[in-house]
Amino acid sequence: MNEIYVIGHKSPDTDSVCSAIVYAGIKGYIPARLGEINKETAYALDFFKTPAPQILENAEEKKIVCVDHNEATQMADGWDKAEIVEIIDHHKINFDYASPIYFHSEPVGCTATIIAKQHRGEVKANPSWAGLLLSAILSDTVVFKSPTTTEEDKAIAAELAAVAGIEDVIAFGVALKTKNADIDGRSIQEIIVSDFKDFDFHGKKIGIGQIEVVESAGIESKADEIIAGLQSLKQNGYEAVFFMVTDIMKAGTRLFFAGDEGIVEKAFGVKPENNSVYLPGVMSRKKQIVPELEKAFA
Ligand SMILES: [Mn+2]
Image 1 (tube, helix red, strand yellow):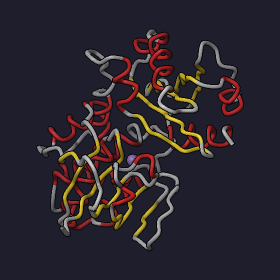
Image 2 (cartoon, protein in one colour):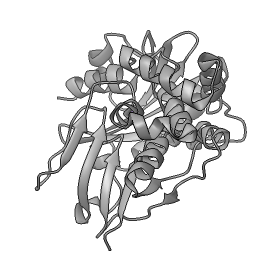
Image 3 (cartoon, rainbow, N blue to C red):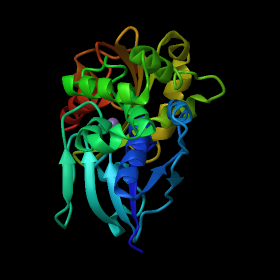
Image 4 (tube, helix red, strand yellow):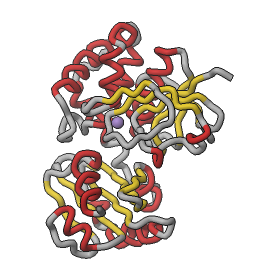
């Protein structure tokens, strides 16, 4: 079998799903995903009339392109018996591989920005692809509010919006971002793991989940449930687990955790109370949480 699968990370977000769909479309590969589609991504797929990619249960013996991730902990099961042919990503690099491959990394706000820039012609000819990539950028940059946002993300988003026929980009972005904020009908445990990533910090297994909401009071009122959920999740071999409740409007994050309180104080310079700290201005797991925790766990 010479088929090549394009896949994003586990607990897929809009960037992981949409970048996989578009890059697979451009290259004639097969898009796939490593988990359920969240409500925000479902909204984008529906809006641009695109079916969800198939689930890839195991990557063993398959050729894969990894988009939006490069860490083994976030890859498809069986990745070590797969052939990774290419990586396109915008996260910090934590990748060690036995053979030479294409590895495209840029410090921009979204994988979709890299793909849109590299394949302008193909994307310009396909309004649905432009819409999907635009959705990914608005999602990852939290409608350009995240400190991960670059001028390039904004410029590419404007180009994509013109192709996709989206006149009010901000309104579309806010409509998109509020979809995951709807916690009704989901248990706290489901919410914690719906956007959850594993990391290896100096040999310690750390998990960090995040929810972005437009009004954080509702979910913060369930603090006891959140902490109990984190404590039970921690039993699965984690040194510590974290859950970011990020308020898009206030531009801040309440960080809940199960694990050593001293590490959290060391990382963020704030003394935790009741297993949480409030971090004003913090919106990005990748840029503002991961680097500080990685240092603190050293
Ligand atoms: Mn991304």
